[in-house]
Amino acid sequence: MARQLGVPGIFAEKEDDSRTFRRGFSIAPGERVLIADDILTTGQSIREVMAAVNKQDGKVIGIGVLVDRSEQKMDFGVPLFCCLRSVTPTYAPGDCPLCAAGIPLTRPGGQDK
Image 1 (cartoon, rainbow, N blue to C red):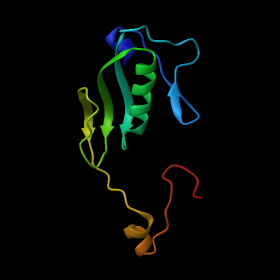
Image 2: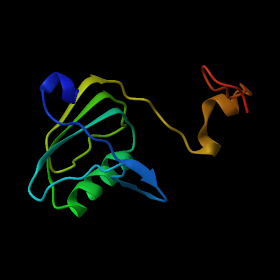
Image 3: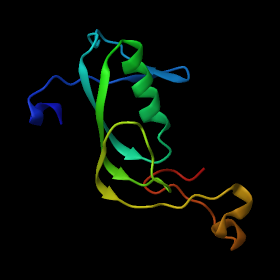
Image 4: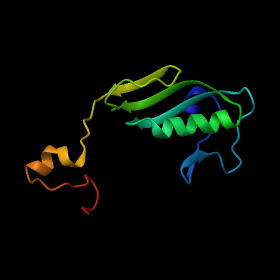
């Protein structure tokens, strides 16, 4: 996305229970940042990236995601743009209709565990 916009692009990596900038990536104080992600479900990873940007005194100006599959509208305090909105219901283990029907859970494209 950054290449198409003609702006620098960096990424945050998972470290313990948060996100951080490594590999020489940094954000200058006051630098304007657009966060881009593939899937939005709970918003946790976006909030972690926002915290990493704030830690370096950057300014998050917006968020863009390819697919927003959150169950409810999320407010990050900045504009949120998505290419596709597709609500995907989630269930507590005891409320799963597939489990109640005896249908085994599978991982599409992966090995069943």
